[in-house]
Length: 141
Image (tube, rainbow, N blue to C red; front, side, top):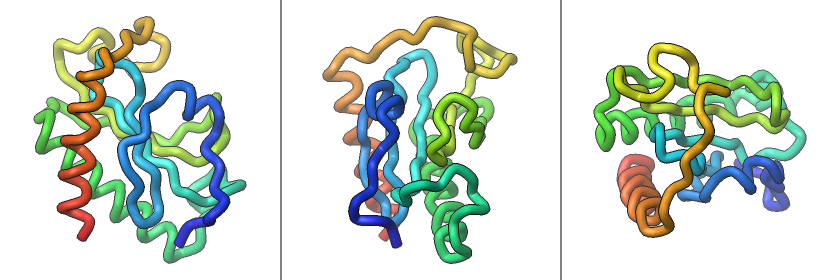
């Protein structure tokens, strides 16, 4: 379903940790502990819009987005879950899944540009990524 020679955008690779691979998508954790912020990237090269995917890929993308969203809600119990595919800074198709809380630093505004990112300690990011990867693996099968 995905391209074997897939290349992750360098900016996403720099800003994120790799959580796991689903059948279509690579799941990333943005290195900002102020929000549980996951990024879903279909492993298809040269795609910038959802409509650029074929129908089977679009269906799989939405299914994996649903599974990721359910996992985020289960683990973090956010007040609101923000999901967006913008691509203004990184053109490679990617979908943000951000758990929002009424006491987060940006509430109720969008998260972009509100606060300087605060990076995870290595152990904290590893624990969180392992927990999410396990939960996603259980749900996707």
